[in-house]
Image (cartoon, rainbow over all chains, first blue to last red; front, top):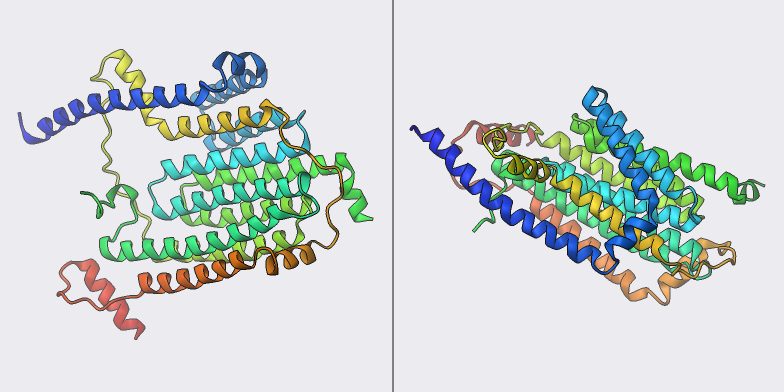
Length: 189
Length: 207
């Protein structure tokens, strides 16, 4: 057996162990998240979730038939969003939109390999937080507008974060000549 | 007149869905577009539609600040960083072979490879359940203060004066840190690879 095959075999063994650890961690996180709320309550009181699951399955079916992936993803997300928010109060609409943008930012942050795109996803998450704060300042606290003040501070921190983060990315690119997140292992012990 | 028109609930609902649609669709474009520089430019659209949402929420000052800081400054910095770095990715990621595993292992593997998707779905559904579970926010019916900028300025200079000063210190520190990090230091060692030589040539050209 030559070297690459041994490498593949070793990776497979490591992969099974990692898979087991991963699933224990994932189920622990799921149980911990929904234990307080009650899974049965979620499943019986939120019929809109089931419609969202159906819509997601529909989008997956269209995708597997073949089609433009961004269009299908955007259409599915939009129809789920409109269905989840149409009968809600105006404050909840803004909060759910912010939650959707935040979740999309988390997805991009975990998924992308380009470091600059990770920073873009982080900016998306910060914007979602800003929407939350300003919606609260309009609907809950219209006299004092404290939410807008906090949004101003978040804007400041976001500007500082973008400047320092992109400087770090440039410095890393100068030293390693790549912006791939998988290849940054300077701090690995 | 325009204010009274905007204050009508049906108009506000339609405008909210218009700008929310723009924000969500453009955010999908940012996430899935293969050309990195194009997704950097689509980000301007996301920030612009979020600024329009701020206008709907009667936060005029923050809408303009959003346009100035996010849609111009931060996106400009991001685009410049994209131009200075080479976004070519190496395609040698470890793809775990699915066909050699047993059935359950294949299923688990496919779930694991979609891990970011599951994380974001769980985050969204948890936030949604927490938001719609109880009526816990005392929604006030009084109108928003007419002079938003006056209220903000008074609070920034009286109640929140110390955080304001800390924010300026933070900006100064971030400015200095960014300059320190991005400064092109002279290298001690001889350039060995072609990348180093290219960097040296660029440095020489810029002098």
